[in-house]
Length: 496
Image (cartoon, rainbow, N blue to C red; front, side, top):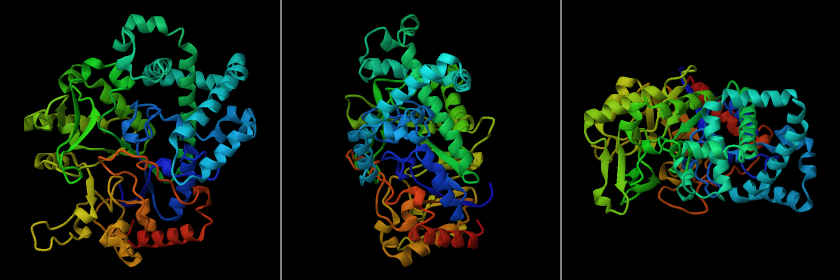
């Protein structure tokens, strides 16, 4: 990888004037054009896997594989266009779309309701006019289903059952479906066939839109974000119940974000059981991410080496690390990193290694030549008086320099960036870092104070931030064009 720089921003924030109130797959390419003008070569986004209907956090996805249909660009769905597009909406629905485009925050539930209704109608048209006559599009759909069956079939079955049971988690489904009993599933497949085809149709549309978005984004490359764990209410866990624990949850110990630590409510995996099938599920995740992205960040890298397990209904004091001994942790972590780096496309992989990282993990990253994050404000001479900042020019080449992440306050909210002059100095310092890659959160490019997420807080604000201007206007606005020119000059000056 040559010296590069890029921008980190959630896809959901990249709203456009023609979208339905949330950043969509079609918006990615429009933003990439601005990135290219700004001299940037990478866009880093957060996970885009499907979330439960009531969820807004991309780290609480209900699948490790499927793209969330909320990100579909409706105007790019051929079957919706065939229905008349937005002209087919009634007056109240057209008013709702207009309202959603103007809301200061993303309204997930309202967007889902509206898109679900018209995606259903689009699917019905697809069956009626394409599948019934065996059209080329129908053949393309069949080819997609066959090629992606290694993950799609399991997902479509689970998602159809989830809808059948009024979106209740699988733990509340009747036996033997809750146990994913093979005979029960074989019996229910036929009654669910239409719904399974619908769920597959959504993923086909998403796949085609994603491929087109990446094609149009080139030469800007798209990096994703791989959560190290998955929700219990997912096809991944439901179909592999023996590979997970349900008597405990995982999280992190007490740290700067929380005096009591964090409980993420996610099921710990049984690494010893997964090892018996050569970590098939982890290999499938690696394959899927390699298919989707040019590179990706491993979120919470330390979780691959050891998980902080909290027994259910027992005091926090009973929490423990699993595995317990360092040699086992090193062996497990290095094997899993190797798996995630595999795949025909050999994607670039970077690691989120912030917080309390044991020295042996740092040593392991060095052996693996795995770039970790260097957050400028935290890279200090902690043992010196006044704790002065390290010189970014001295950062190791195999690292990723950044001003922040989605979990911390933007630069403009700190004393180091509360003026334009200070922020400019910080960004120039970042771009001059010795790191092979620099990633600038979009808020820090413009001096915005909007947070994406406040850890350990559940509210209606987290994960709802959207850009103040539609991305399709960024090459025409004075503010965005001027900032692109400035960023491009700084980037070139730093030899990136």
